[in-house]
Length: 90
Image (cartoon, rainbow, N blue to C red; front, side, top):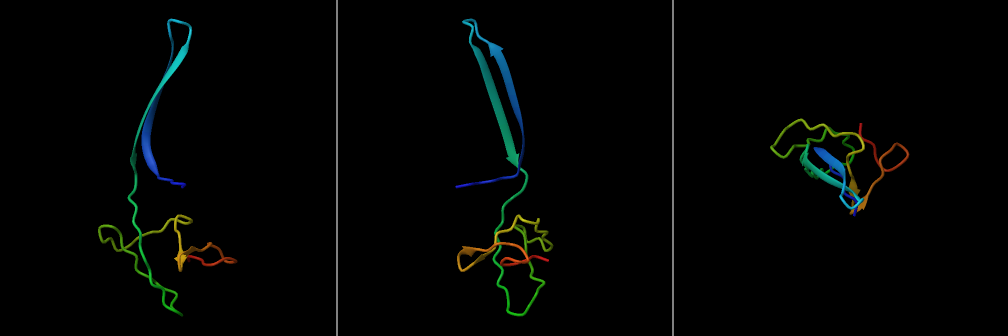
């Protein structure tokens, strides 16, 4: 399963020589999530082009959807975005 998460963090790496001629490397990394995930279900109406209201986790009223970050499903099948494909977001 592929999983992508937008995070912000730091990584520290140090390299050193051991007494017996070996080389060693130690790494430490830490990060925090920049955003929170929320899933919304929208019931589209036939012939209605919108606007559809999308609310956030804390009941925010104006949500901006970043292009190509959405996933649209119809009857459990993921649709493909684009004018010559399944749907467009205007």
